Length: 303
Ligand SMILES: Cc1cc2nc3c(=O)[nH]c(=O)nc-3n(C[C@H](O)[C@H](O)[C@H](O)COP(=O)(O)OP(=O)(O)OC[C@H]3O[C@@H](n4cnc5c(N)ncnc54)[C@H](O)[C@@H]3O)c2cc1C
Image (cartoon, rainbow, N blue to C red):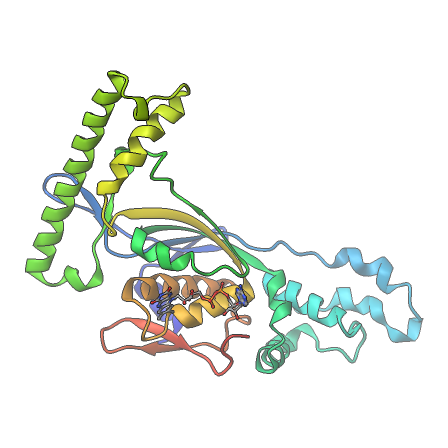
């Protein structure tokens, strides 16, 4: 199956050119909410115009024909255009002998096959992520180079946004699914009960729970109460990365040996990225694994 068909099969959609794969919310009988898959929403991509380069290009001998660079008739996606212009700046490839936009796929195949990955660092893409567990994001944030993270604070937000993640392995096994539902009900109750007791102590003026500012008061309680929450607690995050970092993370985290929840997350991110930038992620081939999940394979790993 190709990326576009899987995107459709998973119910993918697009808002104003930004793809998303949403994740339905379930509830236990007690009303505890949980999700079974990551939700990924593209929220930022490059905005590119090279038109302003014209006066610079006109400053050279006429027979070099540099100004035609900004009139290339083939439109590229913004990330591909940005990276191609960055790469072509290195060799002043602006005249008629340059690689034209219609051959951009060949241009990027040269970059990826020769390992000139620094060019890929110019274009960044941001995603809003939800339906992911704290154990999943503990692994995600290990990626340092070319990435930026903003994650839900368990010290700041209250139990009103508390939701959980049911692992793939529990979903079709009635006994494990039942245990999961019972467990998250009890965690939600434990969190609420501990919070109530801490609030009562705070009202009595317990020294380690008091503070002057109102937000500090709330943090003093929630930073303690969160200790009862499990790895399968949901978190949310905005994750930004440049194309070089996205490629590296997708390759590592959709590998068959990667953990199944992080594989689910990064495969979904790949589906959205390849939809926005088919050239920059065009060397990836989708692989099906025996457990019904997917990953990607490329000849040009870790550009
Ligand atoms: C299947 C799997 C199992 C894992 N198991 C464990 C585990 O048991 N325990 C554990 O602690 N971690 C584990 N990890 C995490 C792993 O060790 C890395 O920390 C994580 O994958 C981040 O990748 P990265 O090091 O390539 O960093 P990134 O930040 O993604 O960096 C990208 C690349 O930039 C370069 N780079 C980045 N920072 C530096 C630097 N400071 N110095 C020099 N070069 C740099 C490296 O070439 C690096 O590969 C596992 C990861 C995977 C995929």
